Image (cartoon, rainbow, N blue to C red):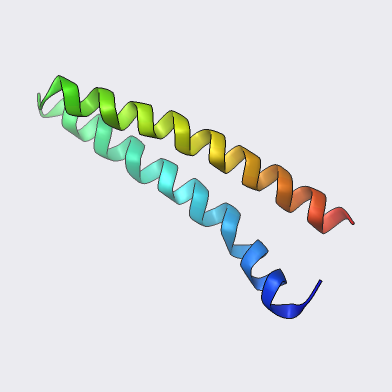
Length: 67
């Protein structure tokens, strides 16, 4: 694996996890403030999608690092 690809792989998982955390925090903040239920629902749906993407990325990183 070349140096550029290694750097990208090292940063993909933390960025994906951070994206999940940000969307989760925004959704929770909206719910606590009594904001739009529709917005909270949309944010929580995005959280689930981002969690799936994060899991796929983490599994790919583990696979690529082991080979």
